[in-house]
Picture 1 (tube, rainbow, N blue to C red):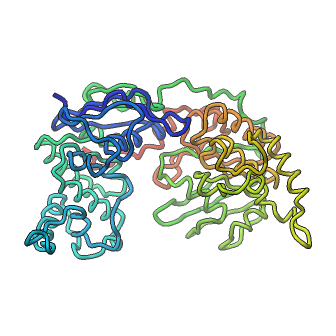
Picture 2 (picture 1 turned 30 degrees about the horizontal axis):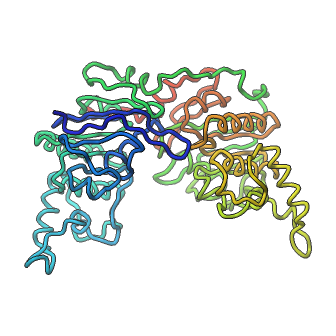
Length: 504
């Protein structure tokens, strides 16, 4: 009998289907890899199996017994423990306290904590991981890699039957990674099943027994690692018809036209390193890469939201001043559509009209206040131009669909007629129809002469819209290709971290 069985899992967020009829089985002592592009549904499946969210339909059983869906603590008590990519720790507590949080041993019926026993247990599990961390130091003072090891140690201390690891080595050195692998091998020998998510394909081929591939929320298949090659796995992850025809691209540009935006040597420690590129007016430059590669941070730095350590940003031949702010970027003709529209791009309780005109209030200002008539006319014009479906301009933005909210985020900048749009995941979480409308808007903006920096984890979107594509990997530009010559396989190959020299 399989150790864990997830059967016919369905899950949606609003109108967006995240998982459709996904099934997965893990055998006792099996290292089972879970692969797929960004947005394939891996994180959603992990959340459901670990009890973070209940599925809309489907079931998960452990050793034949149904798991209590949507109840994290109960699922952990049953024996399924997850370690997420971002370390979940209590920064003000020590390593010992973090390792034992929620499972603190007591003395005399629990009247006080058995600190000696906790220290021995923490020291033992850290030794198992090959780590020598300061056990009494607050975890908030540790490095990211050390905090990740604390999260893993807490999971190992559980008497778990299934251990879920989501990108556990993303912040670990090669030595730390090998120590983790040795600890996992010990768990496998005890019959613990491992569900392992990683973009490092060499780790999967080195350690996993089988791999399940998800694409667009659906199962592609489950295969023995011994039966496939790296190229096969990439093809399964991408494997869909992609329309990358040049007919959908902006109008031809002058190849030697001067750059509107030029970025040189842009660096920020631990985030991105020596980034160089330029964008011409009317060009759509795609910025591809995995989540965490540094794409969003580069856009935020260009817009003056985040600081840089070194490098320069030039707009229309004029360098941006040192330490420039958002208003400087806006005055130079930049606009940013952020990744998280609800938290960063909208004031949800405010009206559609207020959100659309917020960046342009100066244009509607009078000596005694706002010219509400001209502001209302401008909002009405933008609603018509952007195709925003709303009962009335005074409707709160939170009452609209995700696609219409995204049109507001884009439309509020259109009135200012920016020369450079920084678009971060502009169609994330919108339905197919709204996505096509946003694509048409992007092409129209490019044809009107605006430069577009397009950040997207949607491979067909990048291929369909971009004149050129840069691929980021771990904060560095790994490759560049023209849109007409780009393939999904090449972009994914560049986006994946290169094999480590010490990978066995």
